Amino acid sequence: MIPAPFDYLAPSTVDEAVRALAEGGEDAKVLAGGQSLLPVLRMRLAAPTLVVDLSGLTELTGVHDDGDSLLIGAMTTHYEVQRDHLIREHAKLLRLATDTVADPQIRHRGTFGGSLAHADPAGDLPASALALDAVMVCRGPGGTREVPVAEFFVDYFTTALEPGELLTHVRVPKLTGWGAHYEKFNRVAQAWSIVAVAAALKVSGGVIEEARVALTNVGPTPLRASGVEEALVGRPATAEAITTAANRAAEGARPGTDADADPEYRTHLARVLTERALTAAVSA
Image (cartoon, rainbow, N blue to C red; front, top):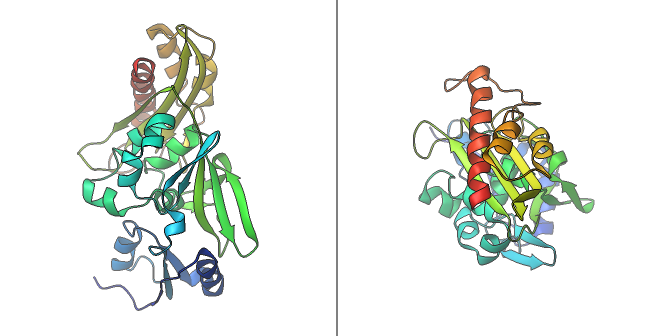
């Protein structure tokens, strides 16, 4: 199907993009990598009057060392995240989650920030960002502000981005030396997660000192498994401790029903996949 007609703008600066979005209002859409937007346009599930293409904004690309954290440009592609040496050293969980995103063609075009701003509850990066306590850097008509990731995802495909506002960067605290794993369950390769678990653990002397766990697709937004984290911290990194903690994985979950799974099945998967992710993270 052919998209409905729209105006197209390729701004040369972030400020120009922000002005265009503010003037366009609700009828304006942002084009990053286009891997989510273009299919929606073709099916006419959205009919914006203006599309603002961010592909020329090189200031929004790359991974930068920012002291205790990494600053990742929103227009950095999945492929670049996969191969960046700073990500590999300080944010291993992001690389592991990104490895599971779609296929190589989409990973070469799709962007890190675009995936987060799209806020698909079945997407692989939102839960990973939540587990890492990322901070979302947003630029709008009123200037720049930082939004904790726990406040960024509001509902299905809905974020805390205000009208005319762009996600420009993501600040990710360094978890150097932590074990990490992303456990994804899907029926066929390259498919969306039916359920997935992002886990990062700091283990010292056989004891779990810190734990970060978040779940994909068990509700309208990614879920931080705080009960699992509480059950792990201070415990020995044993199979028994992991199993006990994983049993709390579905606390607070609001799984839905679709063609792939019902709530009961997703709840079961949350527990099983959490145990697998934690076991892999301990030995990573």
